[in-house]
Each structure stands twice: as C-alpha cells, then as structure tokens.
Length: 194
Image (cartoon, rainbow, N blue to C red; front, side, top):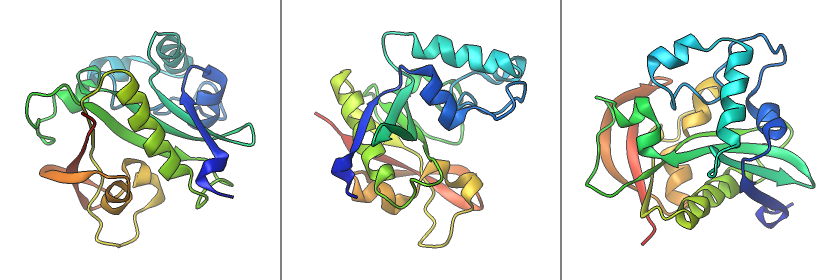
C-alpha cells in the first residue's frame, strides 16, 4: 500500500476521534489530546466522560481540532493541528519559545492505530495537517518533535514525532527548547506556507 491509498480529512467525526484517542472504559480519564490544548486548571477539572464531552464540543466547531487519516474506510491515525493561540500549554510555555510574529499553527500530536503503523500513515497525517492549516489561512506550521538522533523513542512518548520525520515533510529546525520528552530534547521546527 502507498501513501496515496490514505485519505486525510478534518476531524469532525467524534466516533472516529474516539477510536483513536478515547479509552476502552468511558469513565477513564485519558488525555483525549486535551492536555496540550487546555489550561492546567481546565484539564484537571475534566474527568472521565467530561473529557469526551469536551472533544464533542471541539469537533462541532467550524474548524476541526485536528485531522484523521483513513485507509480503506477505516480510521488509521490522528494529528492534532490548531492555531498555537488555542493551545494554552504551548502558547504560554516557558520551555517552548515563540518564534517571530506570524500566527503559527501547531502540530503537536500524531497517533497511528496498531495495525496501520509503518504504512505511510504518519507522512500522510503530517501533510494532511499542513494542508488543513494552509486552507484555514495559516502562514506557518510549527511542530515540537524530539531530536532523538536515530535512537529509539519510547512508544508512549512518540506522539510528539521526531526531527527526521518532520524534516522529510519539509520542516526545518528553527530553535531549541527547554522541553524534554522521553529523555530526548525537543526542538521547534517550522514549515512556511506562504
């Protein structure tokens, strides 16, 4: 199979987002990709089904909270993409610097379902997220991957992506951060869209 077999769409389908991000037990308080979107206080205040309700709210807005990849009609992956100003922990971070004055969009999370990995889904998600940002007027997309220097990244921390992954997608490193994920330093990478 090739990347061309993968369709990437804005994440307006709650059930498909839930397949990628939701817990098996609806009362569990998992991330739902909200930890990098909400203030610490709001994030802590939402538990179990309230987290799902927040995602339902996000997918019902005019712009989606991310994109979903599909292969043969099955949801295969998720990428969180949004204007940086909507992502409280990133926009207010003391560890991840702001670069310039352009209203950047942030691509902060990538997740591929088991059974769809190593099939080009990640590449399709990154390109689909960039295209979605471009369609919504973004002048630049940022990511904050680890600079792992080809060392293995723990699966639980792989959601931030790697430097090489984003370089292959046309991003360039623009800054170091004071943030670490899975023991590796994170960097700021950007892809200009205009």
